[in-house]
Image 1: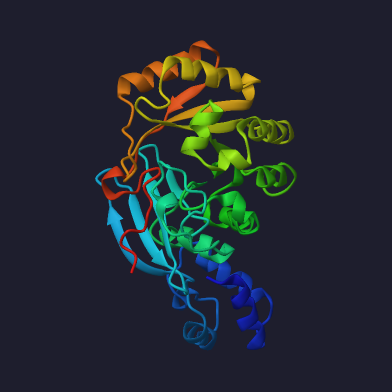
Image 2: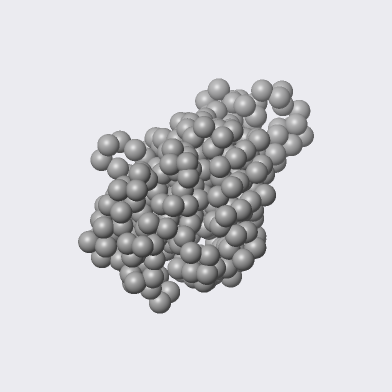
Amino acid sequence: MDLKLLENTLAGRGEPRFRAGQVWEWTARGAGSYEEMTNLPAALREGLAGELPFSTLSLVDEALARDGTEKALFETHDGRPVEAVLMRYRDGRRSLCLSSQSGCPLTCTFCATGQMKFGRNLTASEILDQALHFRRKEEVNHAVFMGMGEPLMNLDNVLAACERLPDLGITPRRTAISTVGWIPGIKRMTQEGPPVRLALSLHAADETLRSQLMPVNERYPLPDVLEACLRWWEARRQPVFVEYLMLDGVNDRYEQAVKLAELLEPREAFKVNLIPYNPTDAAYDGSTRGAIDAFRAALEEHGVRATVRLTRGRDIDAACGQLAARNAT
């Protein structure tokens, strides 16, 4: 829902200012239409239905994975494809993976989104409408900005969406924003915005290798990125989640784990998430489970906290790095 357009539409109809709050309250609780908003006058509900689209996004396609993960493909008003994912866990977590851009301009070599044609930044309402789509299905309680795009290149709209997510049941402490290391955004997050969590896509401790995997490293070298992350940790007092994609024969050797551990000082400022590689069109293979376990053990023997992320939705191309909107019209 375009919240600014909502306010303007209501003002144009001469409605009191509190009406916008009523409409948003219903929407955030999962209402599927204006007709459900029973504390609004019937004439207003009918008028809004004819004047104001209930979502800024059009649903193009949906897919359901064997593990319960659900992916939705949307299209914006100007034809830009956007994907979002709902991950369902046995412990009751209902976590949304939200996109901040249509496509991504940063061309990380392992990521399907990076191989798409970049469209544009999404508005705050377009980000929220991804979440609202799934909220209309069931209650949600976690969100990660790890879908399409680099969130910190669209930080104004991402933070504006984060301010509204608690109304859907997702608190800042259960919201994580991932970045490839976009330093201006990290610096801004150090000083402003709700107390969300920060995740850094690192993927290689060696500068040359990281630049091969992630060209953005040429613009923002890893030492400078880690320095910015430390300033964020000092201000926020929350650990930075380090995302590390496990690529067979590329970045999964013991000595590479040791080098990664040496970079992550002080230890309490970081926690590593090892991510099994999910197949894309890129020329990589995922590390074996044995290699992942050995890498984790090497980190832990050097005092670094590390976990292996659960893979969700791989069979519908909904897992980490797989979003590519291939079915977009």
